[in-house]
Length: 173
Image (tube, helix red, strand yellow):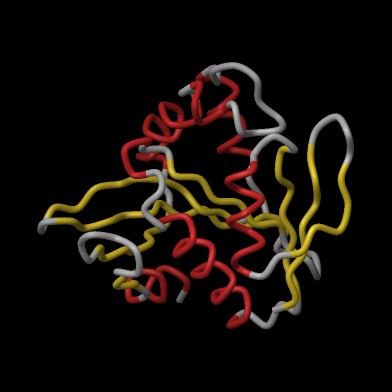
C-alpha cells in the first residue's frame, strides 16, 4: 500500500524555478545505501546535521540501516529535461508515536535552492495527514538557517531550542 501511494504521488513544480521539475518519491532500499552514504559524507551536507560532525563510516551506516524501526525513508527523484536522477532523501521516524519526526535533505548540492526540499517536506506532511497524524516534529541544527526557514515556510513553528545544538519544530497537521 505505502509503495504504490508513493510512486503515484508526484509534484510538478514551477514556482520560482526556470523550468518545470517533476518530483517523485520512491522508498529507499538497501541498494541506495552507497548513495546515502556519499551524500551524508559530503562536508557541505553533514555540516548541517546536529548529530554528525564527520563523514560516515560504512559499518556505522549499515548498522543504522539494519536497526531502523518505526520509520519510512524515501529517495527524492527529479526529472529535468526528460532525465531522472536521485537528489535527496526525506524520512519520517517514530511512527509509533503521536508526533513522528520528519527530516529532509537534498544531497546533490547542484540541486540546492530549487525548491526541491520544500516540495519534499510538503509531500511528507501530506502523507502524515493521510495517515491521520495530528502533528509532526523536526530537530534542526541551530546554525542551519536554510532548514529553519524551510520548515517555517511549510508551517512548522519553533517550540524549543538549546544554545549548543538544535531547535525543535512542530506542525499541526
